[in-house]
Image 1 (cartoon, rainbow, N blue to C red):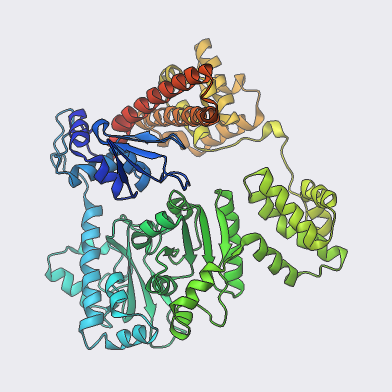
Image 2 (image 1 turned 135 degrees about the horizontal axis):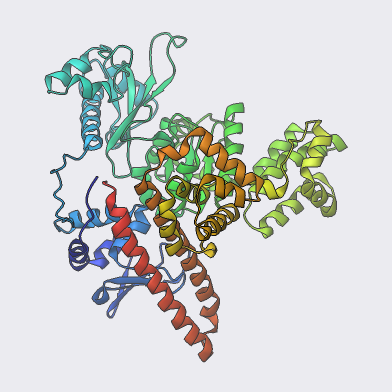
Length: 608
């Protein structure tokens, strides 16, 4: 673990960093006197309200009120933590990173295995690429990919490769380069059962890059032999440098285009993604041998507001599309569906009809509501009461996933029009959908605990629960937080119970349970004790949880202030509003200073 990056390093980075240069990597700026202006990267606008002031080394948007220094800007744009942004800028502007408390990097022999495995994967990706484009053994794989319309320029861009048919060659070669057996055994490149046998052999290889373009994993496509004995695709499992549920194929190539276009295409696999990019549609990415995950959606959510889904039209593809629609809508994103005509995938359209046709298919993507209503119209008989009920029940989860009342109301209206049912009847069934589902589908309704006994177990609740593992830390929690700092009612209730026990001078489990009148919380406490979960917490991890809770509370307060500032923005002609705006801005500034300080103290403890 690294030490805390010194305040002197932060000051040196901010002094050396040309904020106009930093922001210009993401935003097109125009100089007007002593300020630079552009369209805000944090919200949608046509008239620039985003300003960069070089002499103050800061940026500020008069529309959404986002502002800060170069470090914060990089954190927001790259979706990385404080220490990562600080180190990134330090490298960019040639500033030496120094640590407080006399910490010397390397003195404690920090674990750098992640970097070593990334280096290994980059080397292997280069070898596979050479095997595809320069060797006779890889010629058949090169012929296959070029016949599918992939150009040499695209092959070079994505560093496509070929893994040798000799499954022992890779281990022998890497051993000759002084890689140890132990290191290679944990690399994911070899069979766990037979450590000398390569995991990938005689396959077309797709290196998987992280967001900065470093190879961290592979996907390999089967090309010849008995298809019954080998899967079409093999994919790397989770590794120290790679978590497939948190990574998207081609995101490193697509992120700037996603940011510029405010949209992203989620497609079926590697070949689809490569085809989109070759046709100039370079905001396409793909999940990695698994179903789309919430973390993958979060990866693009900061850059895009519209998701276009391009999955297969077969049963599995339709199921994946419907699942993805709900996941994206729950995260507040607009969703459209790309429907391919006269072809099974984007590569086939590219070869048979050209890039322009594929572009038209993308531009003609339909709204997810239209897609679902069309799909359900084919699945159910809309001219029967039973068909109408089942149709509506299958559409209701989509309405549940929408984030605003306007969206929900509009979709209910659309559903009523499709089924030729009054809005009042549709609303009644929607509001009583569980009972309707039970009656219509004859499925038993799960027994539900009384509302009072339902406990929302999220990170907030677990953070308060963790204090029971080290009750000495409650004094710290009480000094940093009040009940108003908790968003989760269950966490707030538990905090108040602990506070009551603390006043009584007894924070034992027995005391906490005796003061607790909430059966659900009692159950969670006893369940955690029985499972031995408290033994997993250390004093530091509990302190970190308290720190996290405080930062979350500050972020919520900041959001509330920004909302108030937004309301006042159009009413600044009134002196009272001007005074209130000034107070809000000063409070926001204090919160930002606290968050930056905590980012330096809390975030820098994690090596990156």
